[in-house]
Image 1: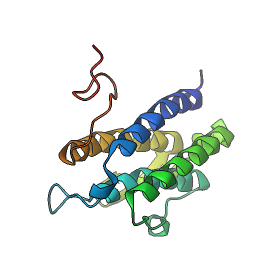
Image 2: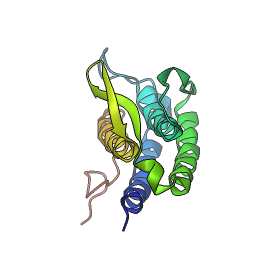
Image 3: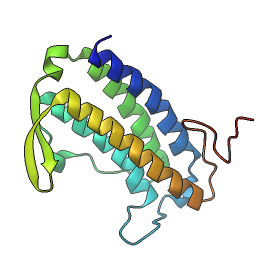
Image 4: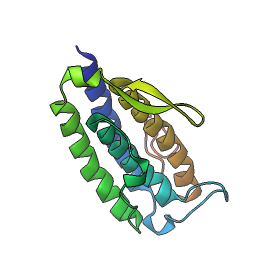
Length: 161
C-alpha cells in the first residue's frame, strides 16, 4: 500500500465521523463560545473547510491564507460546505500523482517561521489537526446540550453495551 493509499484510507474513515459530530450539534447554538478567546462553534466548524482548502492550495503549490472563502452565516451552511468540500478533497487527492505529493511547499515550521514541508506531510498534519479540532468541537457539543456520537469508541450518549 502506498502512502497516498494509506492517507486516503484514513481520510475516508475520519470524514464521516467528523460529519456525524457536526450534524449532532444544535444549529441554533452556533454562536456558542466557551471563552472570550475561543472561536464560536460555527467558526470552529468552518476550520474543517478551510483546512481542506489550504491542503488543496498546497497541492497547487502554495497556501494563501488570505484567499480562504468566507464562512457562511449559519452552522447548517457550514456543514453543507464541509460535505461538499470533503468530496472534492478526496477526489483531488485521488487525482494527484504520488510524485507531486513528495514535492515541498512553504508552511509554518515554528512560530512566525516558514519552511519547506513535503506536501504529503502537510496533508497528514492537516488531517490530524482536523481530528484535534473535532475533539475540541465535541466539548462545544456537550456544552450545547447535544449528544456526542461515538468516535473511536463509546460515548456517554452512544454506549456500545
